[in-house]
Image (cartoon, rainbow, N blue to C red; front, side, top):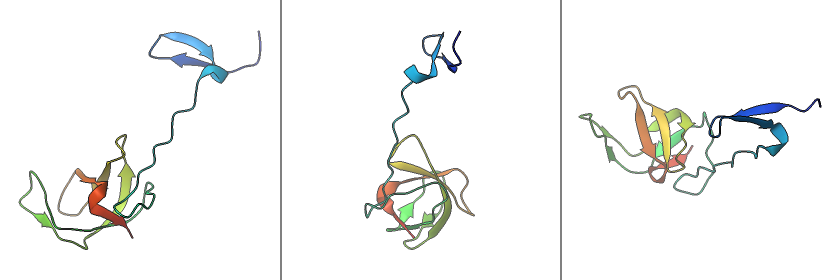
Length: 96
């Protein structure tokens, strides 16, 4: 038996050598200006946004701190003082 690492594939239900597993593709998330975004970045809104489910409008220039990237390259998960579970489209933000 070799010293190679083995990985369980949940899709097929089989064990296989780690060398057979391809790396997951890296998703590039870009803001409205085309700048790459990363987890923990600060962004600024480029236009006023009415938030669905909240009776509040986020104004242009509002700073959103510590963003988190999602599986969708067009959306970022954000935290704002007044709104819980905020998800913004990347076309409406610019890296600060």
